[in-house]
Length: 273
Picture: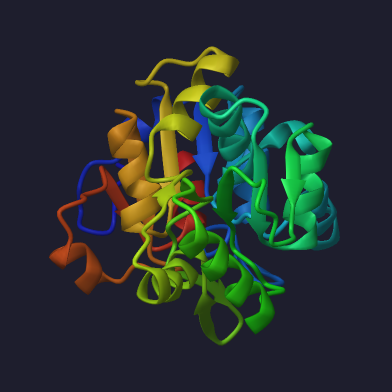
């Protein structure tokens, strides 16, 4: 019988058809692919299932991710992704159609929004309607200063692509979008509306577009407050893997509880054989 980290019967996972996978800390760390990742993805397809990558990381475009997967030997194409940038675009179109969006983010984020037809500026433009902050791996003090002035000078809506505090890299973690927004909050008194996980939006859109039920879907991730919370909010089963951010102590202290806990994706692969 397939059992999870705590001995819970996990044989129900054999009936899943749609596997929604986080990336950083779940299938790889920086440039290191976790054991079992490629085997798991191939097995899912061999069993007649489907996998999709759901990532809160807004520093890269889908093309960037496809190139990285190709470099790492992980199977996946453009149709295998749904990102916080995709979710943010949909939110902006629905709630602020035609708005001029001031963006603090990477060149890749800015290009991605422009390619989707949004009006975007990186300049301190008094005509900007919204302030948007992403996970900015190209962050400078000048950018932070500009963003703080944009938030102080007018009561513009403040939006952020994702609430993650850290992003896993080789040797540890670096500040992610959530941490960057904390520094902005201390400087301006403004707190953003976060898009992406833990909201159920990303899970719901992908699941419905692909035609799977809640019962057929499982979300796998390494963060309780984003990945697992998103799955819980979307009413799908969740797997917490202990290969990234969350620790057993975090799990003990959190009100967010996954359906299953596994050491890593290799254990999931072996359990599905």
